[in-house]
Amino acid sequence: MTTVTFYKSNDVYTGFIAEGHACFGDYGKDIICASISVLIINTINSIEEFCEDSFDLTENEDKGILGIELKDLTNPDTQLLIKSLKLGLDGICSEYGKKYLYVKTKEVNDNVKA
Image (cartoon, rainbow, N blue to C red; front, side, top):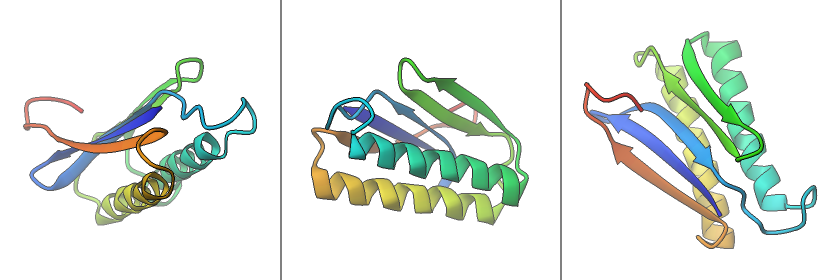
């Protein structure tokens, strides 16, 4: 199962991390894992290209880990892209169930990094 955790502080997204593999199908044919990957990678690339916000990237392909921690929380475009990512992932979760994808949001205080 893939778990995607979105981090928020005072109603502002501070980052997200995806962990694990969906295990819906064989490697290279797992449509859920591919869908999750496309949404996440496109969001990260869009933030970098269009919003020019800085962030710390966490990735480990073997373990299925990919996420970011935003350094600037003031760009409304970045917030919209993350909300769009969550909407897409929630749609996958609704369609295929929490057996393959679990999406959650965790509130963090200002002194704790995502």
